[in-house]
Length: 189
Image (cartoon, rainbow, N blue to C red; front, side):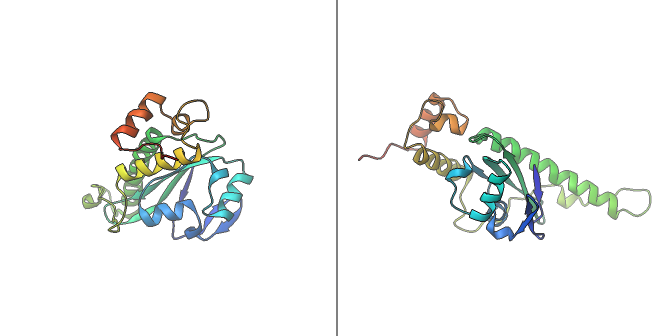
């Protein structure tokens, strides 16, 4: 796990890089979670992905850390296994991210408190909806895009150990139901 404060340089494997050229930088900018199921298929951020692969990382999940008043950074989980993270994992990691934000708030209150009474800025306890650009995807859109991306990578193979369902951490029947609910069908041709 890594915590990337975006005001600092991104560091992995002892190398520094511009945060804009990293998965965490995208999450910082969009305030949307990101799952990269298989780094060998990822074409964005070639330098950072190369460094991650040198360290044996094969998949990652990055979630934003945002308080009511500011963007704090991005929380990245990396795995030595491909397809290690599904939608349920991403939701759990977002919950962990929210807990990290609250812990950060309390630690800051302890540091800034003078005297014997702890003064917690209560306006910051309520996590605000992150700022979103007008075209920013919803969780529904993000789920749909993640499923479509994995389906394309697997050439629309749904079942089996290397199929889309396994890569998304879902049962084949669950993925089939999601495809119907999202109105997704295999392209003809």
